[in-house]
Length: 193
Image (cartoon, rainbow, N blue to C red):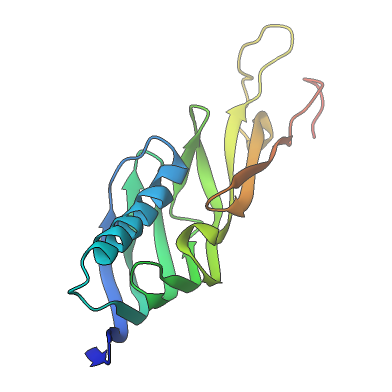
């Protein structure tokens, strides 16, 4: 619904998203969020340069309504769910809500390795796009090797694998690597644990 009051236009309503696939590639994960922020900055410059147009206020609620919302690009793949509200001027909107990946649906790359997605969650509490917080975690299984020969062990059960765990959190503007650890790695080839 588009309403005009005095010098402001207001766009409000609810959007239910049934299907969406985001496929644009990025050099770095932060570039994804910076490109979105750049769109708003360009709109702000364009709207401040033309005094003929009225500023627009947003009050939009967007929710995912199916399992067919996906990211599939060079950074990773995942199915997403979200419930977001955008409010305020269109050139500097504030977001409230979350976006979250299905942990069984995805993977992401880091340091040339593919990690299984365990957690991906973005949260906004009435904040600009890049001020949203996020948490990301995943694991990568590496086959254990025999210490004497550096060849893979003959057995194929799950104890033959070491898991590299990666976690990251922070704001979208300032992401931080929280940890890169190993789990279930035997220090002695004869060790069962």
